[in-house]
Image (cartoon, rainbow, N blue to C red):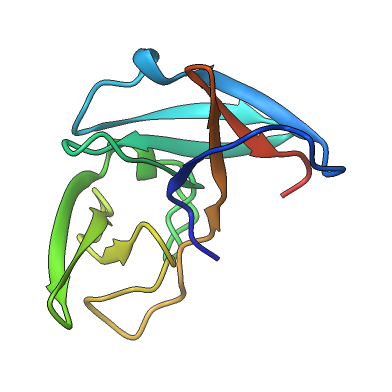
Length: 125
């Protein structure tokens, strides 16, 4: 499942939760949010893409991922956005959650949708 932002309509039968305005997120930075009972980390990349992951570090469970270092890696000739855990420096793909730097547990990712400047996530993810 891709976690990158999609311009969408909310005609789906899946309940959606408004998270924040796209303009509330600074490029190259993450912010923590409480969404439908779950702590998530919302990111806006320098190339104006939006992603959401669990705010919990997969290794320790600490709530730190929104303070990670955004970056990217080239994989099979394609640019892939990444986040590095600020505690252990493990690097995760923002689109799939796969750990790129070790044989570690993946980082849970969530689908993000944008409608009229508001970022939405599916409820109960």
